Length: 240
Image (cartoon, rainbow, N blue to C red; front, top):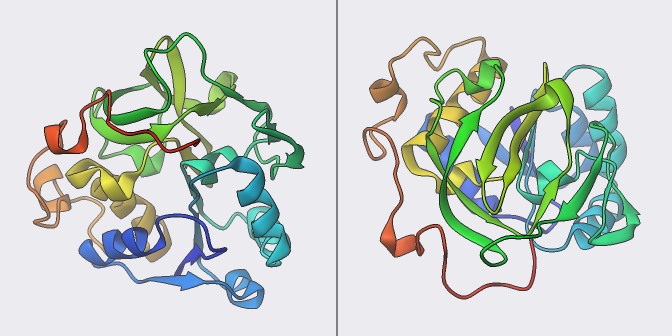
């Protein structure tokens, strides 16, 4: 079972629906014992880093996630869920991250506007099994004002927004994406499918072509949609 960590924060229903679209079983899990039994874990998150970090710990999900990490259970962090994989954030310096990756999360500076809302292309900087169906330059949907200051081999993808920003970070069994794959059409579904394949041993057809991996969701490569506000976006929530 793929567990979507339910700590009251994140696009939970959208994430579960995206996995259903590719034929993968994913359940919203709020119980720490159930999270400890998961075959893979998705860590979503939107809003304020400190609020997410405190709610995650208050609901007792911190310890089972750390234990899962030690057992090499596949973990996927999305948006603020990706930021939680790092040591902390200047958005709330009193809240600790999980520390799976070294480095802080900082507010983007020198940008056209904040937050970045909309589609942007991701440049691949490294390889990872869950990125096997992602092409260099594919577009994904972003909503954020803060970004990890990661360096070295864990930086697997970047995005240009007032400078080069980390968009994907990971190692063998952990991947964090600053964008929202569940809102990124066919491109996001391909990434989620590869993640699900890591759990099911390829039972979802990991060797499928890009078109087949789309699951009939939208066909072909996703691209910016003016209805989503483009890369400049419309009204901005307070912070991501």
